[in-house]
Image 1 (cartoon, rainbow, N blue to C red):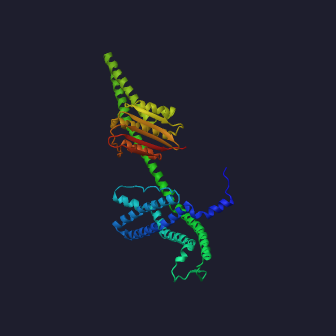
Image 2 (cartoon, helix red, strand yellow; image 1 turned 45 degrees about the horizontal axis):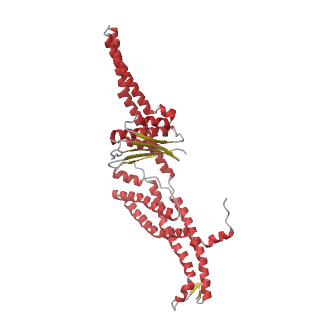
Image 3 (cartoon, rainbow, N blue to C red; image 1 turned 30 degrees about the vertical axis):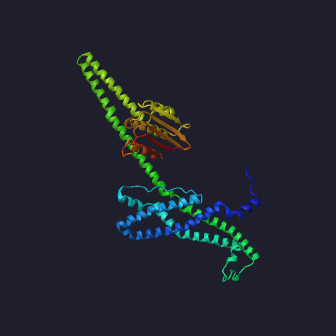
Length: 429
């Protein structure tokens, strides 16, 4: 149990405020506001000219560039707040890409709600930052000059008329008088430290309010994107199942029906029993192939072993079917949700299949582990490398699958290998 601060410690904290490190960090933050504010004033002015010229196509492109540029200016402000104020502010969501090309880039910039909101934040930022920097210089300079007066008053020029206090001109040119001014200056330095801390607190509130993430539009965009990805992913799975049924099991069952039909005709016509047996044997083999394809298809939809045993039972069976030796490290103490389990299972299966088909690897290492609120899947092979994420490819499908659950996929595959694919999926703690 901590001891409450005493009156003496509180008084010492007040008096020693001018020499505390955070006081000087706050002063640096406020002083740095002068050049930052000047740049912001110029930037906002140029944006105004771009808005006036926005009636032309080039003007619209320039205006879109300025709206996007506000994100960079806000990033500088976040950096200043993080380093000097110890204030961490979340980054806003990225600009949503609705279409490709220059026209889409301009349209996305002009419709960037976060960019326009940050531009509105920059309007008062410049003058306010310059005013705070000027006030910081004054509150430090005047008490500092008074505190050092006992040193420099002897070197004042002969024509100096002294100090003007309360409408009266006073030239303290004796030791006791200069010491009195020095003590007043020291007290002024203490006051200056607390004024600076108050200004920093005000600026901290301003930054926290103005640079807060726009939860409404950005969150809606993220949810809409994830919903679209989930719908597209579900449609692709349904089309794949339909194609596999049509091209695989359905063809096999048709062949079975034809062979059995020929066997029936042979029996009814009194044909050769050996020919009937051959037809039945072929039908039997084709029926087994159809069952195997249906079993593989059902496993692709949702493996029964995953339902019964979870990842601990399903992943070892999955990697055991891989023709390349696979080392599996599995550390999932708490069983995740069914959606996370199936996504993890399919990610491992797809990545193993890609490694077998394209990497030329001799060994694969699979790591599936849960760290706090993240389920991480990492598949590493010692193959040739050079893997890329292409539209319509297997890795692109895994990216969509991961992002639909709020996760991400990263690929590290230099030429010559090795290739490492990491999938991170958020899960409840």
